[in-house]
Length: 244
Image (cartoon, rainbow, N blue to C red; front, side, top):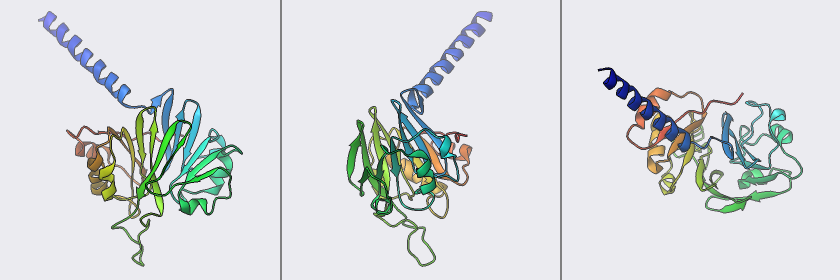
């Protein structure tokens, strides 16, 4: 009996070690050469081989005077919580590069800007960056115009160290998401009325099946309920802690 119990403990412990190892190898968010931090709202910081990419820096949710300076800034669209000149003034240098939507480029008085429209791509420091659609179909303003019109803003797919990272921007579950292929890590927004509710969020993720899914730009997230929605889908759902 003692031998059987010991074997059971060894097997169980081994299984836990394997599970933990798999969890660690799946996620690149804590890799020393490639890390992703959620700073709050729609703001991310990506670090690749000591190069810093700031995504939609927003001064209301983070003190960018204490953030590492950006080698590259990605901006999805020109709403104030994504295109924040105060945050930019704190995080950019004279050598910072910008990749933005057309609406941002027209207002951004900075050098080194690359403008991407939906379907266009560029390369920076060995990283391919593709602009993809991000827009509303259902959610609209009182005048019946969408909060985010089609073609106005971007989502981005970054190919980093052979990993594809999808940063959706402000969007609903749009048909173009089904064209996304081999996404390793996805960041999808979840707040009303500007982006997605739970049902849209789940539908969007299932349409392209990323290996790892993170909510961002959210007002609230029921982690347990959403995790159950992705059981048996092959999608690992995780809510990253917001960096303080």
